[in-house]
Length: 384
Image (tube, rainbow, N blue to C red; front, side, top):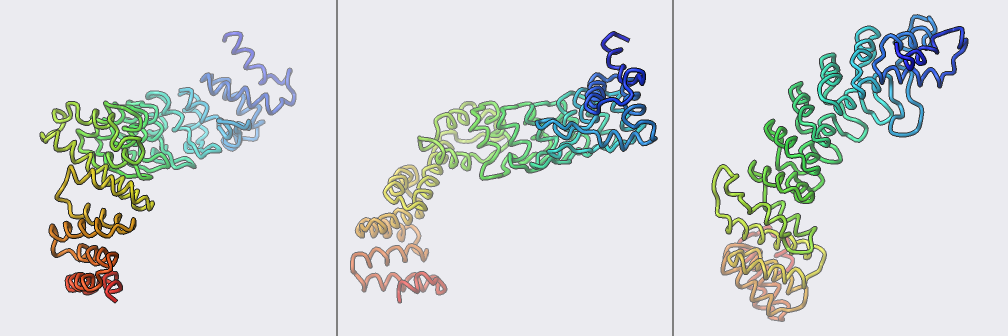
């Protein structure tokens, strides 16, 4: 052995250490696990740690890193797995029968840290019963961690071993995580295993996450898969200074028709996305009682889609809240003309006429609405 190995073996000599300090033993054991020094590791565990009691399994399972920090609660198996120490892993799992799913302070298993390497200890632990779907205390699974690292080989290995492709944590699914890091390769593998490209977690889809990360390759990959463009556009309108971020539009429009399986009208799609973004932002402003801004946004949307009766109904409501009965009635009349059998159009007309103090006309419109929907309590209350 080398001189450094000899030095590590010294705690096993009873001539030098009658009662070894526990902290020193712990350090030597973890160092041997890290270096895959199996003979030294065995001596430390059986002779010193277990002290000849014949219970090495219990002794080594109870031994944990005690320092406060990222490694707190680590077992020897955590150390060996994270360093790729395959011989020590074999000894712990096959000879001592240590629980392969031991958890540290954060609920993380040895397999999780083995995912930081390709093959080796990770594959060994999976072959010996490690739970590929076990999550830590934050709900993140091994697939989340592998996706975050962009470790394609590990993502493939976990999925090949039966890992669930769509576990949800605070960060979303593994596809969300990979998209947020711009890991194209990991995303491709997840999509090939039928990951849901439109999965909504905490109000965002993988496409929205990729847009926030400004990853053009990932955006185009999701668009090709069939991700919901309008949903992402609506999100960007609420979280960007412009109505629809230029970056988002440039990414999805540039060569996107060549990437889709079915060609589409690019300019038409762009118009639909912008319209959707305007409507979404207008609805948000209306909800926040910012009626002036909402009316302006609806007006811009009408330029792109002049045949949407709902836009005229919503803008009519804005004018009503701002006390402008004439504009409210004009929009309500346009709405009624487009959708003569829609009770809400009648309701809007009645409200506008009420504001203009034309109570007879308002009564007639409310009656029209109630005939179309006899159980509409809002219209009934307005008429009463």
